[in-house]
Image (tube, rainbow, N blue to C red; front, side, top):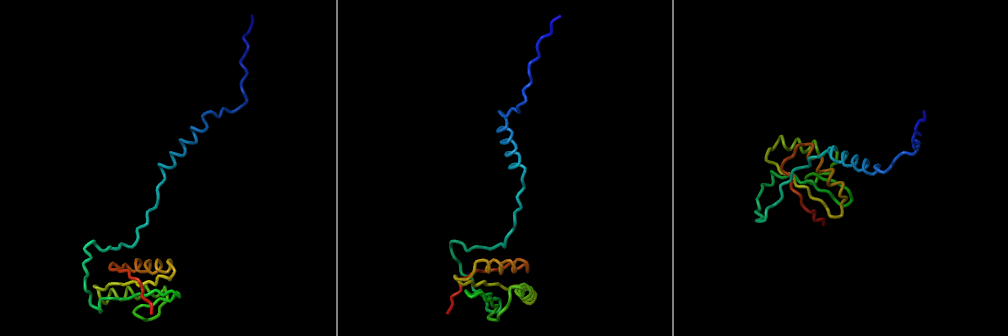
Length: 135
């Protein structure tokens, strides 16, 4: 009785479909990834008509950011940490208050973002942005 010869088993790992598997894994991770979406400060941009609304001075709080890094609230120097407290207090005293953030073009961009973050944390809903005209 004669037995048939066994085929020799290869000791190499087949890599012909390796690129297909990597591509499928890449697609799977892209589809199943969830990105965190941060909600920023809601700003109402002006319309094309550009209707100008007059606001009484008593209903405005000016927050100025200067090129040298100084911040003032109604011409009183403050630190970044004090802004939220002042904004919250102003909203309690006057619910119609509008916060005007005046920023110098030479000021650090991050400083304006920090001030807007403080306004967001204080739950300010009426915010206006303006270019600061330094003298």
